[in-house]
Image 1 (cartoon, rainbow, N blue to C red):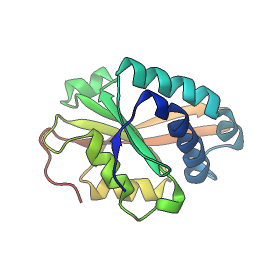
Image 2: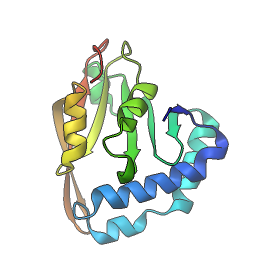
Image 3: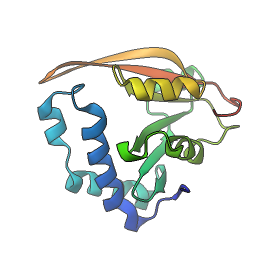
Image 4: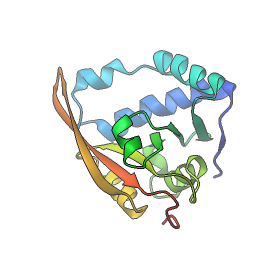
Length: 166
């Protein structure tokens, strides 16, 4: 189970993993209408553009999961020394516990790299444990009002040049 850089032809597969993983991980955490809004077609257009424009480092384990990272989008985080951001890390539930998340995480965020952040939905216990095992610490929180209610997220941070991954 090796992670590899994604290519243009992977956009549909990444989108299928993205949609399925959202439904597996966020059922009960997000309102059903939020889960219904995500579609393979819209995600495929997004991921196709991201890969084509090379704005994002995207890694794929075929049929299992993907990760994406790139430049930090939050200027406040940049000022705190977090130059990069893990945008996405999704693994299908059938592969939980097999090390795919760690392989994907490491493939888009090299150990000796700059500081980075990742955001996780509050209540997503599996993701919270994963990020904390990888040395992430909570450096902030976000709240967003959605039609289905308020969602809360934790922002995890890793300093520049962090040590080994678990």
